[in-house]
Length: 132
Image (cartoon, rainbow, N blue to C red):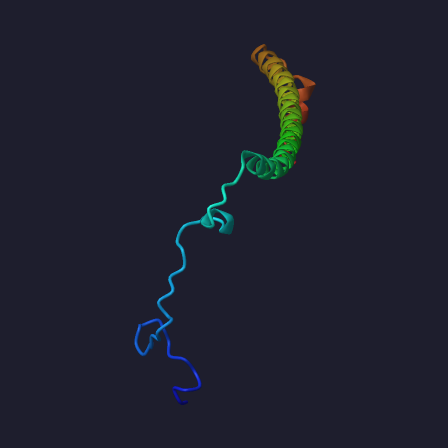
């Protein structure tokens, strides 16, 4: 490729030719064209600009508030379900404890009768079941 078709890369600074009108430097300040000409912005124009941004800010704040409320509702619902699950779990365990206590009491009664020299029917059935 010839150098005439494509301008050389400015990345390395090599091959860049400056012509007489190339020393234009853009302004680094963030001033508006009106301020560059010496025209000052009035307080009223700033208020209008801030109102427009604050109204969208209010909408965003309202949306954020609504999302927060919805999140709180969902959190309370999850908490309620978790507590219901735990209460059911505790209830089942309590029922199992009651059942085991009844079984223990019956075994204690059987042991007392065996100590007295009497073989209860329940003990005979248990022995018979184990032998099978």
